Length: 308
Ligand code: DHB
Ligand code: FE
Image (cartoon, rainbow, N blue to C red; front, top):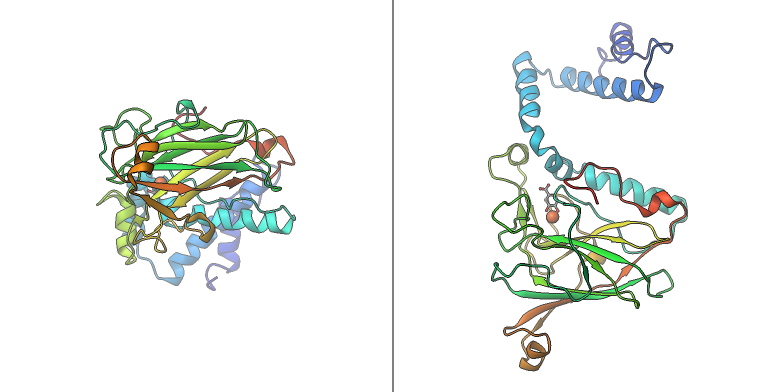
């Protein structure tokens, strides 16, 4: 902190601004402390970098105008990954045994996708991408199948766009909740997604450019995996071989989340899959950790497009 930020006058000013100087007044002490810390850090930044009045107002207006993309800022500026890092550390400290690693949700989930049986096709057929069959089991830490598991999957099309946010796609295209069978097995058919880029010229793109970064994610498939008695899992897999595999603007890639992609071109395999062209196949098992409280079984309270 600069000398000015920690001077008695400014410390007292910060106490006043944040209500810390008035414990009797309404407002939770924790809220007051957090507000004080955020303002103090920004004061410190202004002082340390000698931010001018013009720069301050430019920044304020940039943030205000950029608000519709805050979900992307959370990913691109590493906040989502940082929250994951902290949850991982807390779990490790509490001795929670690791299942499939978590990784960020991203801002593009839509709740209420159709609940379908294992084996369902989840794309609407309008994107002539490479067909993908993904399958595996949902298991507990002992490797036993988890009955009643639901694999909620969402991913982009070959342009890197997600249904709902891309109104040209049909409702819930490439979004489904897949019921694993009695053996915990799930399977779905879709197409291999492409990587995602932040909207060109948008506020996220502008921040990233200003610091010499790009806004690309490697191709990936998102999952929420839920089953009674187990912790809710938020994760993704990456499509191996993507040029951005280890250069994700949202920092979500994890070594255990890059399953091999098998290319199937044998006519017998193609026929058996009910397809008429070579396809990609990914096998991936999810391992769930038992919940120690009911709250761990449910999705976080982050506001989402539709809540199921
Ligand atoms: C963003 C997009 C994604 O598809 C994703 O998974 C995470 C973040 C984004 O635009 O910030
Ligand atoms: Fe995504």
